[in-house]
Length: 319
Image (cartoon, rainbow, N blue to C red; front, side, top):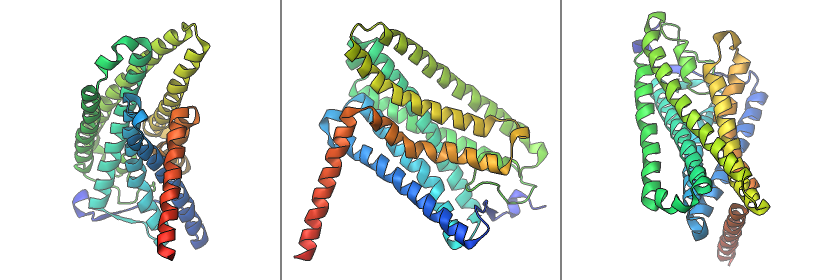
């Protein structure tokens, strides 16, 4: 069997066997990708352009939207290209780059979600200290720490994964380079180092999860003590979307990567990969704008400006 030094490319999972189904998958993935680009792009533009949204909560939401754009742009374009051109190939360097950027965006997003829970905790449980604890410098520092943590984690994890000798061929049962699928190709004697790194990662993730859980226990206790129904509604309208995003992100990611091998199958692996790598970046803009009137108003304003500029361009072109 080939080892890692002789492998120059990997073979990704073919989503369909017939040409018609391949093209159908291409158009389906393209529609999902464009929806994610549109939703996250509108949120990014609205938060950047509307001065009323220049607050810590929306600043972190902007970071989340940018990370979602990066995450889905790491996996879907290659899958679309393979479906369109009827190929399965991805180079060894391309696979390593895909793993690095996917881990980077995913881990940084988890850090941002953790910071966002702290933001909501301070806003609701310690409102008098909000300006002090979450000033512009503190927000920029926390966001930079999240992005820096993502770079460091993905660099270490990618280097550790691709340093393993591969003895089981080069075919991956996934539409992108996913670490659990790459580990299936590794020689059995090389697992201990990667297992140790994964155990460390799980402990860090669980620590963040406990922090998020503790924050929301305190938040709901404070919200239920509010005498004003309007105040409770406003608090829930800012907290529930974030809680929904965290739940969707963690449940799919944990099950996809930590389920026992006995539950593994090609169809289940593919479904779980779609649920944690494609669905959250696509649905996050919808979840956050569903109950947030300020954000919906800013997005509508952005869309009206976009339509105005488009009409002006058409008028200039046809004159």
